[in-house]
View (cartoon, rainbow, N blue to C red):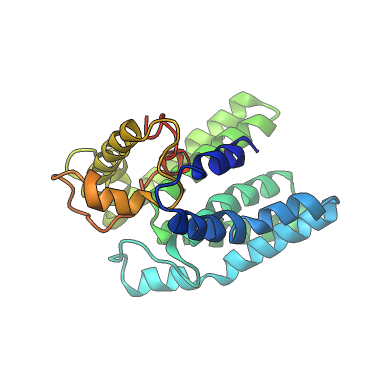
Amino acid sequence: MIFIGVLLITNIFTVNMEATAKNMFQYYINNFEPFLLAIMFVRKKDWLLKIVGFMILSISVNLYCIYQWLLAEGNLKRVEGFFRIMSTAGLLSMTVPVLVLLLLQSREKSRYICTALLIIAFLGAVCNNTRGAWVAIAVTIAITSMLIAKSKLKGLAVLLVLTVVISFAVYQIPSLHQRVESISNVTTDQSNAERFLLWESARNMAEDYPLTGVGSGNFGDLYHEKYILPQAKETYLGHAHNLFSKSLQNMVILAE
């Protein structure tokens, strides 16, 4: 509610009302509607479980992204399956941790099903090749698993073993190994370097439009017209490439 309130207030001072109206309708009405409907109408546990079941089923059907990755022999930077790349990454960021929790809580009969679905979703996340999703999955699983573990020491030991096993497996696949290593590379990795340039441009924009901001949907045009830095090579980008910055681009704390 705080986020929506800030969004509506700052959009009153938008530099382009038409662009802001289109952006608001697409991202904060059309895309946001299912979330609001779920909060309004999902009141029973069995309803929630059915929704989770359909979400897991949709990810399982999206095995096509695994096929795409295998077909390209791991040379594709990212694959999307039947969805958009970031839609697949976002769904997997939720599905993999949910399946881990279901597996930890499941009984013997359903444990095999959860394990099979988890393997599929995990492979899908690997093949999707979105680094942000990998980090989100790892952090979410670590925190939630430790919260429900009866023995914190055993839970930590299991997480360490999983980390070692996954690290060893990643090391055996050069393309994945390079992709994981690039997460912390802020010097030679162009994608990472470009994000820092974007955030600097966003900060400059925030200094020129303090408090009121530029309004939703206007970052891209202003970035291309005035705020893009000479060092930037990916000139086609239209957002700050950071969910925190993008969500708060109307405010003076943008990209800090």
